[in-house]
Length: 415
Image (tube, rainbow, N blue to C red):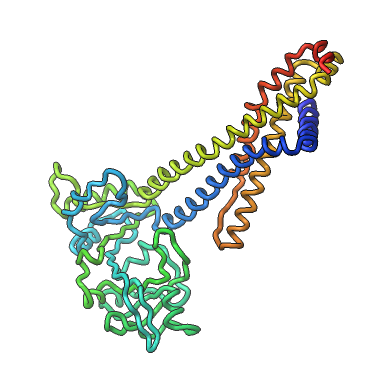
């Protein structure tokens, strides 16, 4: 009850200080407001961006391993000259793995042909990406269909001229029409659409299927050299749920070294890429951004803390005789200390709430004005209020301690 009473009185004193000294208090609180606004804005933007990126990474699959020539990364000390000599994944690698691997639920060989033109009668679309994959593509990739079906086993084996297309391609080639059953001209060949990918929207990692046309790998063999480096061949493997990604990776490494006859003393001449690599790099990147946000906002909060301390010293001086009267009536030192300390905390909370309100207003403007969704979650709100309380305690302690040490007789005579 004493705590609640002190907190109530402190808020009353804080609002009284705001009312009587509006300009002085406003300028002092401005540092706290700007600091909280800066830090929480950075955290909210980073959390939103991190969430969108993580969603894109999750689409790749947590149990999925990509066997490629180049390891993911490319930052810092990246020995690209060493990786240049590596061979690309081949159909021989794929067939050998498929017959020997035991920890996976699906394995597929994929290539990609970017910036291609598709035609249907008088309609054409440029910049489409043609992908070709073996039959297990539906087991190694995450996708849904808005209409139609996936390839049958016979269509994949025989290399039938069929395809799945993305939502943007379907809309551009067949506006207001059903896409399945129609023939699209792809690299001079007519290919029948048997399914349409469900629209996924923009993707930060570029993994959206909205502008992708997927054909069976055996059909692609009639169009291009599917083992050519220019088409970025890769083997995609998705592990069974009962195995960890480390178990899958371990088996794949052993099999690939055996298939390529790599001696025990030699390094791998292939890369096993997985989503944890991207997640770790994202954590490092956003960790740096978080530190930058703390540094930038910290200076504003530091200035605001000095401002709050100044207000509190002035407040102690103006109410010295009141402190003397309170002490003469039996008020203990801790009561005086807590009273002024809570007042400093209340002032900082007011500044912090103003900063949070501005951030929230900014998120609304970004979301509804610019179609850029930024989320201010409860964690950042709690963080903002916690920082305000900490700054209030630090900046208000010495003024409060000074007030608590005043001699009651001298304090009463000060007016």
